[in-house]
Amino acid sequence: MSTELRNFLAIPYDELQEMNLKAKKQRLDRVAPSKIQDDRLKYLADEGRIKAVTVMFSDLEGRLHMLDYDKKFLLKSYDNLTFDGSSIRGFTAQRESDLRLGIDWSAFYWGPADVFGPGKVMVFGEVIDKGGEPYAADMRGVLKGFAEGLYKKQGYTLNAANEIEGFLFNGPDAERTYHETGKFEYVNTGGYYHSLPGDPLRTFIDTTAEVQRAMGFENEKDHPEVAPSQFEINYNYAEVVAAADHIQLYKLICRQVARNMGFTACFLPKPVVGVNGSGMHTNVSISKGGKNLFWDPKGEEKLSKAGWEFIDRILTHGNDICLLLNPSVNAYRRLDPHFEAPNQIKASAVDRGSMIRIPIGNERSMRVEVRSVAPDANPYLVMLSIFKTGLEGSTAKIKNLRQAERYLPDNIYKALADFRKAEWTSELMGEDVKGRYADLKEASADRCPRLLGTFVKAPEVQYHHDVYNQYLWNKF
Image 1 (tube, helix red, strand yellow):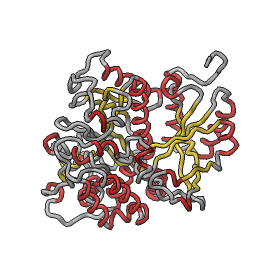
Image 2 (cartoon, rainbow, N blue to C red):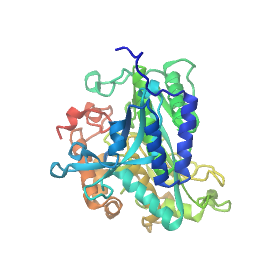
Image 3 (tube, helix red, strand yellow):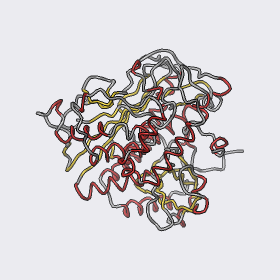
Image 4 (cartoon, one colour):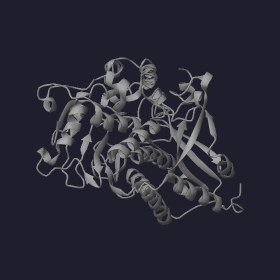
């Protein structure tokens, strides 16, 4: 069909960056939601080249869902957007299926037309139940409520940034066809930090970084990782909900760019045995009035007393929350000490096998790095479990807690048992949502061999929550 008669929005990358950074600053400055809403509605009404608004939300397992609303319809009905929650895994039962989508106008993005198509803008939604309250299984809404409550009561701003690793494999459907091929095919075997300009991996990284930059990510560095065809593209800190949104956008951007190139961006934690797996190291800090509460120039490793107490609570509940940080059968392949995997429940400034590391920092950058997080985890659950545990969890009376000989589970069934029996996870999520989450994880695990063995089994990929296959999901 000819495109000559169309006049859809397509903005140059430099202008996109400026627009997205301006929106990001409004969010960072906590501009009143009503003011931001008015600005966005006026923009949509005035900009005739926009045809649709993509509203994004995540299910209980962290899978990103997107609905395109016609712009004119959205302008009339943005406060009454309904959808069928019974079709979303982990959401409502069929008898109570109607849910609403609210719009978080502060989480508004302009995407490059050559990647996401012309004439569209993107915004994150908030799931609302029948009574008008935030929906209990929408972990983004739960995290947002938790973070806003801390800011109002104590003036705390929760900050986070993630180092998300992934693999680039040949073919646009490498995960979906794994049960037929039995293998993933690398696009590059160059090695850590080394990929020649113009080769497939470097081209993918460069293109993805350009898209991120245009969408206001404020990139820091990018490079091939240790394993063949593995990549990491780092970007700046953000307030906790925005940081979790960035994870969802990062994975979406990577997948879209890869598909456009005829490849698959894969975020399974250990898609290939014998090489390093992929992690999502989560760097966190807390500030108040612009001051980093984790910084103390006289503290051990220059970390404050509050920072160490934060660590102690996470170490205490390490086994309880392991399933939230490592939610798939495949994730437990990654927790292998032979590949620098952080499977020890301890804290260290240097030992990369520790669950928690204290990186070198200064007054601005001092932080705690939680290393035992898989890239397939629900980012909103990750942030909630880390911050709520670090601030409100208990501290065990274990001798030498920070260096004790304790280990994370080496399989999902042990992690499930720890999660189900822990009182803390009930407090963290509520009994109902906790049960739903555990049931989903167990249903997927039961379709895989109980023993990991020495090679990746097809069901680990087929029944992985991150591998989009509605046909299989409808079977359980």
